[in-house]
Amino acid sequence: MKTTLLAASLATLLGCALACGPALAQGGQYRNTDNKNLLDAAEGTYPVPYKMPQVAEVTAQLKLIRGYMDGATPTRIISKKTGDQIFDLKTPNADAIFEPSAGDYGIQVYEMGVVHSGLLKAAEATGDASFTAMTQRHFNFFAQTLPYFRAQEQKFHLERANSFSRFLDPRSLDDSGSMCAALIRARLKKIGPDLQPMIDACSDWVANKQFRLEDGTMARKRPQEVSLWADDMYMSIPALAEMGRLTGNRKHFDDAVNNVMGMTSRMFNPQLGVYTHGWHANHPNAPRFYWARANGWAVLAMSDLLDVLPKDHPGYEKVLNQLRASIKGIAELQSGTGLWHQMIDRNDSYLETSASAIFTYVIAHAVNQGWVSPTTYGSIAQAGWAGLSTRITAKGEVEGTCVGTTLAGDMVYYYNRPTSVHALHGYGPMLLAGAEIIKLVKNPAFEVQHKVRTYHYMPKGGKTDYREHH
Picture 1 (cartoon, rainbow, N blue to C red):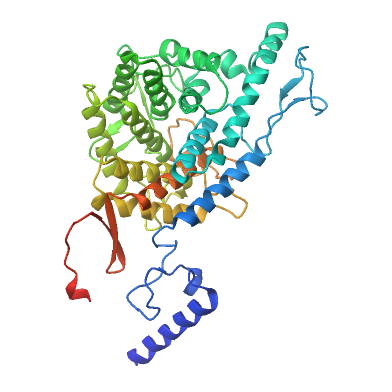
Picture 2 (tube, one colour):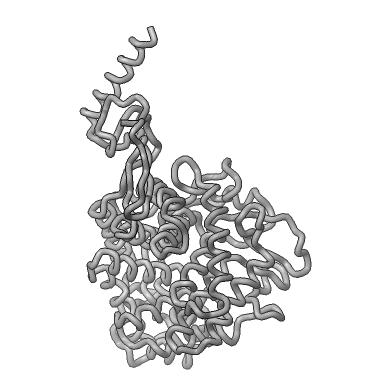
């Protein structure tokens, strides 16, 4: 009886595989196409395409995202009353604004800084310079319109209603840090015009004006009088790191390292290996909420810092060790889809895209940089991309991204944050992740062995013995 059932099951699997194409198997699930034996009953099926990523496929997905972002982010000035385009850039008009995008894709918000950083990485990984065309378009628009909006502000005093307010009058790390890092990266790669005035404005806020604790750790006066947000590791540290690289002034590297350690000492849980979303000076022992995207910002900040921090800096090993500890904690909480949960330690919360993309990028990048072992972490990054690849629509939209989220004090809020394709937070991380997966697949330092139906990232020349499985 068992033999008959097995034969029937294999026949069904084979029939579906032949009829539906190589990627799909029973129940709409995925079959691993690296296993050519369609009758292998031990292979099973997967909720995501568990297979070796192909450079051409990943590149095509990145191009879809780039195309969608390019079409969704107009660079025109219009009248907010009439919607008509404004061409006169000599006479300030109080109604003049950046033309809004169809989604929540502001062209100067911090999330767009991540998009530009992702486009730069995609161009580097693929060798396709067209990935940076949108960056050049946006930055040329900034250069052309900054004098106009400065004149508008001087005449009408619109403050936050001025489309250029984040750089005319920055008021937070959200206004300044992420875009500052992207502007400097583009400048160093000679992509786009000279935007030094914008770099000066945002870097001055991060370095000199942001509210801090007495030890120099970046802080906020919300939601409580003195609060830390793990998000602010990304909103400050990469900008400081890039300022150090641009100017050669080591004080910025010192500041960046100090903020890694200051944030970590208050928000990192060494038992779980992850960061709580926030910390309050007046209630340091408050319940901790381990929101995934905050952890993403934390590890991305450390990764970006290590990319430019001189190896002889006394803080280099401290940051590297902290990143390794964080990657280990995050990796242990990956779900069976390759994605991570909205509350990273709660597997009954939904699977969230933006955090998963950041984790996939950081882990793959750490492998490629030699910061962590490919044998340990290569397949974890690969599995992350398997899950992420299912979140990209045919239009290039990124699904499953949690919308903007504040530092909150209860689980009901975090669990029930909506997801939206209009949440820009997912697009930059997805570009970063795909670009780094391409580098991982092409990395000459190791080879990937497909053995016993899974993947083993082995240093070149490494010896293993699988004779018993042949």
